[in-house]
Image 1 (cartoon, rainbow, N blue to C red):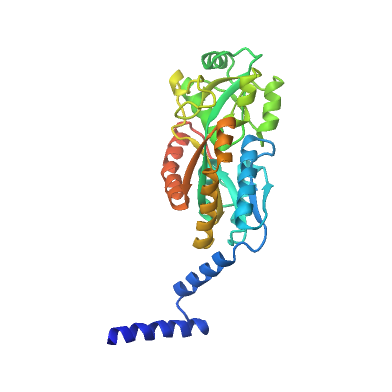
Image 2 (spheres, helix red, strand yellow; image 1 turned 135 degrees about the horizontal axis):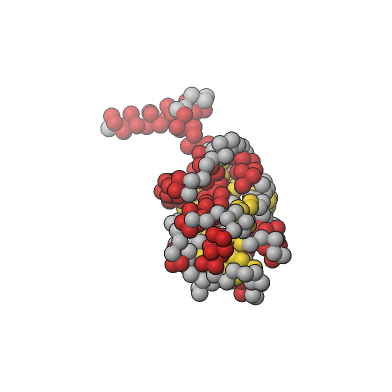
Length: 334
């Protein structure tokens, strides 16, 4: 009986203290989180993306935004902020208010590779909270069909004859790491050419101004199927369902990236747990929707649903793998 009265008095005391602003920080934080979730969102949600307009991943992002907007009861607007190897978009979101109204579409480049490879990075990975993993990215090495290279072995042989002359384009730090790993594995040297966005690189590749390029399959599958580009090898650990006859780099005897690329949803790090959980719930529900399944069937890649905590663990597990790959390929931070 006495214990019961004590618990009642303790609850009453905490309630009184909260009224005058003296409640413990943990109590106030929980209450603030509950208020944030109950009133969220109060305005349009911005989905900041480093992905170029018109690409397959941009189309997927816009489908996600439409779904999220309908479920949240507020517009969800895609804002493309390209440049600096995804750092412009990441910095903007990392410095935004952690109220859930500004979100980021990001990849391993943003969360793992940029921190490993850029000394003057304008954000920290710890400033971004994983909300949900969305897609696993299938990537391929492609060449112009009208060019002289019909296979990976032919491309490598030509690079040995002309060290540093063959131009290979990439649009991210992850693809740059693959190019370096292939150079190391085959004992060759390419002219590695960075591009801010895939469409410009694809245009130059089709025009013959580039010899090869590595990028995600949804951006080039139609060009491969129409015969304009030839896929020499899949970059990741397994073949892609979109181009099932194309072998992996490791099948062809060269070193491959041992992890698969991904795209995920992030928020500023101090977002209320209740808001993060709500955003994660809607994002993962989208992956179960028919339009998401149709997209990956028609455009490539694969659905790879993880909630925030599981996603955070997966990122932590990948970091040493990328670190080893970078060291093995002898890529120096810039």
